[in-house]
Amino acid sequence: MANTILVGAQWGDEGKGKIIDVLTEEADVIVRSQGGNNAGHTVFIGQQKFVLHLVPSGILHKGKTCIIGNGVVVDPVSLVEEIEGLLKLGVKVSGHLFLSETAHVVFPYHRELDAQREVLKGRHKIGTTKRGIGPCYGDKAARVGMRVIDLVNPPRFEERLKQRLKENNEVLKAFGAKPLSFQKVHAAYRAAGDYLKPFVANTVIMLHKACGRGQNILFEGAQGTFLDIDHGTYPFVTSSNTTAGGACTGSGVPPNRIDRVVGVMKAYTTRVGEGPLPTENAEIADMLHAMGREFGATTGRPRRCGWFDSVATRHAAMVNGLDDLAITNIDGLDTMETIKVCIGYRHAGKKYDYVPNDIEVLSQCQPVYAEFPGWKTPTTAAKEFKQLPVACRNYLKAISDLTGAKLFIASVGPARDQTIFV
Ligand code: GDP
Ligand code: IMO
Ligand code: MG
Image 1 (cartoon, rainbow, N blue to C red):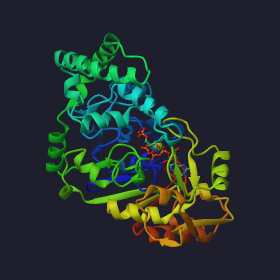
Image 2 (image 1 turned 180 degrees about the vertical axis):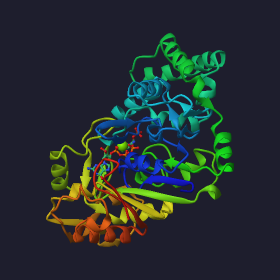
Image 3 (image 1 turned 90 degrees about the vertical axis):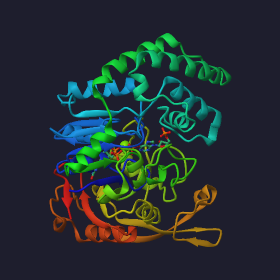
Image 4 (image 1 turned 135 degrees about the vertical axis):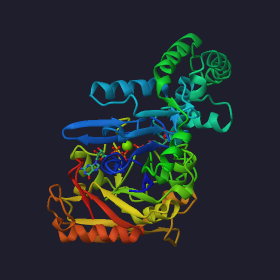
């Protein structure tokens, strides 16, 4: 399979979990390299639904090595709950999951600050998952964060936590929020630290050894290109590099060890949270929500929906260097009479064939659409590309051509066997 980075090519929730699960078959090591438990990756195995937040989706395959890399921010209490949940479902975790010593730790003050900042922003809020992701990455960049290696060192942890709580409780008080109790946070985090200690490893060395053995590494991206802190619709983004480069810095595997980049995108567009979504459309949103689809895997919020935006996905192909595409949720369009695809934007008399950086301009851009005939046939039972209706095949070819990467996987349902290799 070679070393493969898988990224979301839109605004997150593209179906990365499902595609990772399918590609894991050929991988030896599966790595998360950025984000935290803001992610929600859904995988169906038969009728059993799994939603992974921090643990790489590869854990659902027997015998794989799964790594939470240095670039991830880890809420240890939440990670313990996730591991316990997996154990209850019969998933083997011990000996298969490894947590980087240098991953940063999310604390309750990060979550509280995340929530308070959103309140302060009022109608300009980001619509975060309130998992403390932004404040934790903020501490990392400000060099005041705590890492897993500190969490599992009790005396050091106690001392650092006292310092950090002193500062953060002052900030919380300034927001009018309740200060946090040292005893409570300390007890909960020490318990989580003890639980997680056997999983903690020098994952950079592990990954280099895996490379040396010629093992295949699969990088499981979280969020999507337009939520990237540098390349997304700032400030309506998450706080990590969700694009392909983040996989290298967030794991310690250098760029010259990467063989290919796969972009996952839906056959339409969704976004959860605030910020521009040029092709947003009530008709398609109502249709998908009525089908019981497009509710957030982490927060349960209804996702905003729109037509496929090829201006955006072309940008994603550019900044990620996409070689291959996995197009998911094709079946979501099975009943449409006509399907629109955004092929350009218009703003103040100017045409754009790229995504403008000015967020105000992007928010006001009017999409220019091309129309495609719908196929009005269920696609969910198709096993091969040629079994898909002609109109569907034409649509998929058109959106991959417009994006500028090769169609590799067509997904027609959430299950493993609803995956067509093109
Ligand atoms: P991720 O965050 O990118 O892993 O995506 P999510 O799991 O948050 O959301 C994608 C949703 O689409 C999940 O409910 C998946 O089970 C589902 N899904 C993935 N691919 C397909 C598909 O081809 N068809 C249908 N109907 N559902 C899909
Ligand atoms: P997966 O991996 C979709 C969005 C939030 C919000 C913004 C910032 O499942 O695709 P944050 O809590 O990260 O500070 O929120 O980013 N967001 C996601 N949207 N899928 C995700 O992950 C997301 N993770 C964060 O809704 O708009
Ligand atoms: Mg998701």
